[in-house]
Amino acid sequence: NDSSFRQMQCGDVVAKASKLITFVDLAGHEKYFKTTAFGLTGNLPDYAMLIIGANHGLIGMCKEHLGIALALKIPSFFVITKVDICPEHVFENTMKSLHAILKKPGVKKIPIMVRNQDDVMTCARNLSSDTIAPIFLTSSVTGEGLDLLRQFLNLVPQRYEWFSKMSKEPEFIIDETFAVPGVGTVVSGTLKSGSIGVNDTLLLGPDVADSSFKPTSVKSIHYKRMVVDKAVAGQTAALALKKVKRNQVRKGQALVSSRLQPKAAWEFDADIAILTHSTTIHLKYQAVIHCEIIRQAAKVVAMDCEKLRSGDRAIVRFRFLVRPEYVIRGTRFIFREGKTKGIGMVI
Image 1 (cartoon, rainbow, N blue to C red):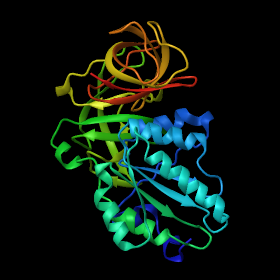
Image 2: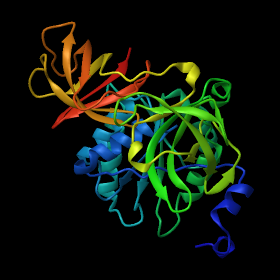
Image 3: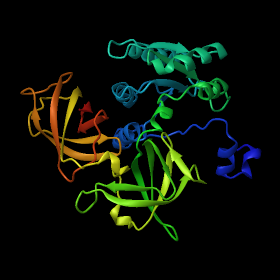
Image 4: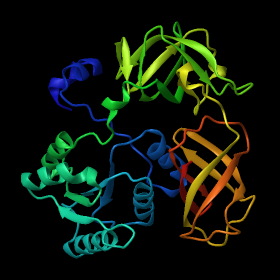
């Protein structure tokens, strides 16, 4: 709403900005948990910001989302909103509940109430250590606490060391596909490593028809609505591809260097931990895998123990049910089926 920004295009703001922060707004309702899982695994966030209404308190899904962020090892901070209309006793109950959760054995975080600039500096410096949980008290009506939150976002550093990944082979994961009139097929996603320039040739796959990886060239690149010659590791970009039809691309595919010799896999081994499950998990158990952009049903075809219950860990082999996927060793993922939720790492 600032009048100085009304006449500016998005590209102008990006070109003049000293720091860019991308917010990924994820769903709070249980019905849309798959969207939240997709955002937390596929968009490679540096941090998780959990919004809590002071007058509503900690609802069940807030605890669920905190648990997923902890499982994926994403440092989190909390923003308490509507403090201007919240009765004193309700606010105290909300804060007691939050402090109690943060001190639980599985969480073990130090809650820090951010009240001044010194607190902002301390939290920004130590948030990536994943031992503290900054708490901001805000009101959108009175503006209380928003300056401290803005300063914190300006100071907090990137968690991923993207600079060291720029020299590696390019690996781009696709999370959206478009057909743009006059341009052709456009894919958007995150560049996990390396750099991609205009006219670079990469392998696109797994192919929809035969799961192979086929060469394609990059026609043009857009970053934050600006035309650029090159995208580097850590950036989300849109790439226009040459001679590729819209029905040949889908979410979950990747654009990778031919030197990586990529292959699609029907099966993969993983080290998993069960977060919540009402009964036991046996062979042939089926769940939906959320691994970065990949979202597909898979079943357990082998495991190193007879059965699993809540809190158990095991090495298991999953087999995708619909199509093979490009899975990378060391990637963290979530799997779910009804109320059952678990986390794992591809090995």
